[in-house]
Length: 452
Image (cartoon, rainbow, N blue to C red; front, side, top):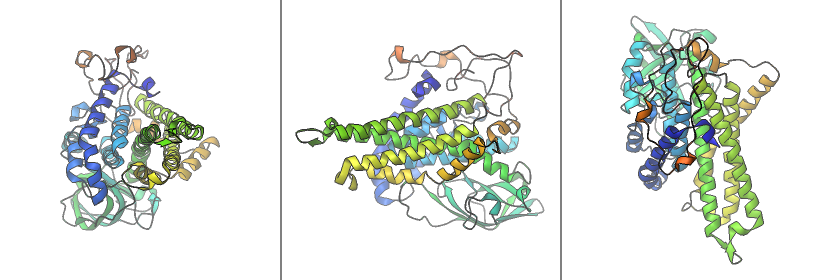
């Protein structure tokens, strides 16, 4: 079903990520589950594949591939290890703040390092007292000459223990215009990472606490202007956080179906496979149906994002649908496995634990429903997918030429490869672009982004 939104280049990328996940990530899962510690070397290995730069312009060393490509990267990693999929999604969330608000100097300094895997970024917003209420935060930054001095504490920071560059939103004044965002390098004096706390799932991934004690950062590390902090936090969460977490849930969901169908065909009951029992088929059918709907909502939302179309509601709905359906399917899988599912030699219990971790970040399901209810009543606010166009100031990247593209994705028959429709050209001679990019002369479409 996702093939409607992808082409040969997407599917070739999917196969590359899948092969990597099977050969490099799967053998490490038992170790990560046993130790429950952050897997630093594997995180770095994944980063050096260049996938963190999926949405970074080619001018800065990135793939320039867009959100559909980013989604399938996270999905395929999460199908094998949700922890490593979460590592990539958190890094991508850290990319957003620089892409959207970074100065030209900040982009030139950090985006190439991020795209190459030499720098893992994070974003730190949540605090112990305020939780998800961004305006309730109390961490501060005070101007002192050419520096700002940061004090405070952040919690639930993805990639806290492997991050090299932290995007931190703190108070510089009162009210909604009193929040600002800063880039803080991990070796900055006055900055430290808290002890890693054992968690229920996502073993191998770190999400911990950051402390700032008279942490002095140059004024040049301010993202955007003073007062842009709320926009940094919300736009990153809405346009990167929600679709990224959606992709993690989608990967978990696919793993649930794969493992459960395998179990049902191998396990015997009454002299025949479990899969032949009617009640088992019903549960498998429900899992398959949920997965089809979840995949459609996920790829439709990021396709709109790549097209530069308003899609806040679709992004909210995709996260809601994927998180809830992955949890429901994981519970059904546990029912099917019965006592076998309680033992850690089978991964189904890990899928359920990992799926719970994706529920709260970027808004719980109740938050998504409240926002969708406001949309139904005509009271929706934000519209970040439209407002993003005013935040980016770069011309579109030059996409690779068609002769650089493989004829077909590995393992895919030529007649299965979706054909590319004609490129849509506007009356003024320009083509629509990904959100926020200015339009330029019509040019050949990307390997990774479906023709506009």
